Amino acid sequence: MAKPLCSDRQGDNLIAFPRADLRASLGAAMKHHRLPENLGQALVREAANFPEVSADAALAFALSQRLVPAPIDFEKARGILLVGPSGAGKSAVAAKILHVAALIGRKTEFARADGGLALFRTGTNPPAILTVMEADGFNPLNARAASAFSALGDIDGVETIGIVSALLDAEDVSDIVSAFRFRRVIITNMDRTRRLGAALAACMSGARLAHVTYGPRPEDALEMLEPGALAAQMLDIAQH
Image (tube, rainbow, N blue to C red; front, side, top):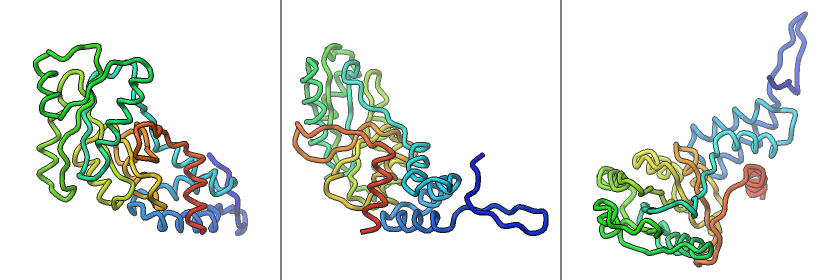
């Protein structure tokens, strides 16, 4: 159990309470980045359990408890189906995956979802080839899209990865990840936003984080989020 920073004696009783300025600074950061209210409150509460450390260290701990890294295994992957709203960056992500796979010597191909999935359904896809498939975009406000896409990846050898833009509304992102039951997500447009609520909602609403992207070119890396750097970035942005 963490030791409290502040205390007050009343008779023989020791009353402990988290540092108020820590909660205030973290709460302001959650509001600035427009996190879903429940997620923001949970992060502040979990960080406040460690009031003897700095705000960024406390937030880094809270983030590390919820951020589950799960990068793509480019050596073993066979079929990757990219699903996401229109404009999320699926084509750019597909190009990046193909680029990385080619660099390590994998044979690759790109396919539309219907054609690529047909090969996996019939077992006629070459097993040594990594096939990257892009599903049609959808309106994130269309609830029917979830049922239409949810079964696409239920094929042996194919994993569905959700593609989510950091520019979207964080509440909408949380709803998308939950509705589509994404197991892993790739977050795009990290270089185009100063509000990180959507990015956090994408990888803390039941999905693990595969990668994030900071540029649209194939050679722009598929990167990861590190809790310490992410916490420092969140607080720095919120204070300026």
